[in-house]
Image 1 (cartoon, rainbow over the protein chains, first blue to last red):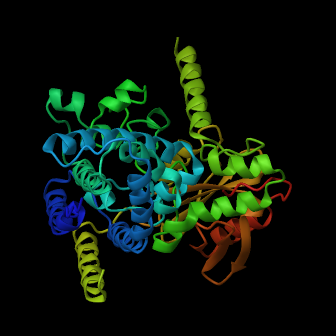
Image 2 (cartoon, rainbow over the protein chains, first blue to last red; image 1 turned 180 degrees about the horizontal axis):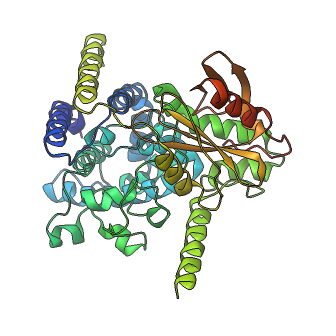
Length: 304
Length: 141
């Protein structure tokens, strides 16, 4: 079945650039969007690098996907419009879990951390993408779709649409969408929470397109106007060097795995949540949230 | 991706970054209030001493009360603030010059820093880092 579908993200690149420029001008005029030169440069270079690394490794991923399609698929759902709709929903469901593990497993976080490394939140942040996602087990989450009978080219196509959808949610310029939309879809408000490093907001709102996954699996946290979002990492980077941004967590893993005393610890440095150490000397997001809750309780008790 | 396409992408990126820099110039520098507020946000349980702020307003060192094993570092690499809690093992090299303290860190995400200062402020900053008690465990990720 030859399928020649366009690459949506490649087509969208000029629009991405123009919308970045438009947001800059809007922010300059209204103060409702913020940029910084070095941060913007790093974000856009990461985006370019991600495109290059994706192109370099695409054939390896394609070989794997087509092997599964040829040997393991249960059905062939074909190319009818409903298959694209079904694929879009299932792909977004797979994306939710890839993204969730991208935050909860250090191996996958090493690739995804790049996207969260800016302390700004604007359309250029959307383009701050990983160079190393292909070296994580993330793609495994999409295998069930191929086995189910969705052609790999369709999966690639709907994943591109999914990424394009996620571009516009990276903005402070839109406060809230209509209530019905906020209830079902990922929005700038929901995704601001996801990019926050406030303890209250950590590890929440993993959705790509449909926020319902977070509501179903208990990871949804609404934006609270009383708790303004601060963007970035719990330990922010002190560099704009794209190479350091791209590889810092991988380097951290290598150092930790190398110096770990037992095989168990070496393994855990790969699969445990970021911040895990055998002696608890660093903090995971769960530990940060627990400490925050304890401080909050103590403050409330003191106030009573 | 073809080399020409790559080159044009790079030019477009540089132009966008220059526009961002022009439209959003970094005006705010570190002051005592900003240093204290940001450090408290990152390390809420620590009691801060008097901050030593660099002459260029790009960095500040914070002694921690009743603690000779850790020093707070607050910097502003762009227009946002980054905080660290330093122990002796985090510092790879400390070089004092006339108008600055050049600090190299064992930190892939923060390799080095020029702490611009002179006179008493430079002495205090230098002593604060030089005298960090080496008993503390390594803090850097």
